Length: 370
Image (cartoon, rainbow, N blue to C red; front, top):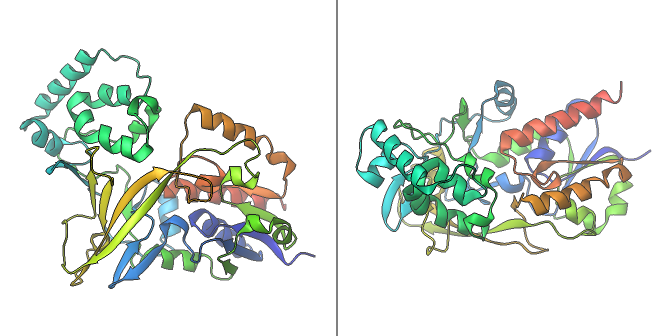
């Protein structure tokens, strides 16, 4: 008899949801994570009384009442609305693209004027079937908005020219001909009061936990502890990069405490010119409407990922998707392993998508017992 029903590799949101479902069903679970804390990339730590998003800003949003009700069992959410600001060489624009953006760009106030300018620029471009991100962006919003607010930021984020990126990346940015500056259209949105770490801790209560522990360094020993494994680490690392390394983008954060109660007046300020080396500055206190006498900011620097570094964003272009498909064809050889999460499934997942995936995987596992 093995000691655990499930070994869960990764204490991030996917692993926590899977663990919570299994614990509720009476299963014994061991969670391990090579970092020295729980929460994965949604980990928050308290500095100067402020919940700091260590690995970048995470605003929870979903259009699913089921998912919202689920997470609300483990945290009370505030009413934070994500309204990021763009800074292009000192000039401020509203994000997402809306009438305030168009006013700042062209000095206009009427939706029809904005539509006309964009339509003229799109027509002039001659793009009818976008083949890459650059063409998709111009086809959506014209050349002015693309050159000012998309091109530089995106090329810093992904480390390559926009014309070399797939077109579907830019479809994540909404365009509105109203003054609505809520970045998301989802019905439910907010930040867990007290931070994500407290929420994750409540979800995994009852599981055994080992931090600072790398599953891949002692895989055989860990596999002998449990009947099944839920793996949320990099899928190519699981297979020892036998078919080659998938591509990811990495991030570095420069965090500092400032002796002021308000540095930039917003939680997220994007720097969209190509020359500024960081993509954005996060002022963490604004996520919870903080009134602390000091503030904490983080500058976010994208970078090229190398083996041994922290992978953040899968580069889901055709080449990498084909390589992931080749890895996934090896899954049947590991019937005791479930692959999940952004890295295990090698695709970009918002938090609500990650939760939905983990809930489905857990439900399917439990159905197999009957």
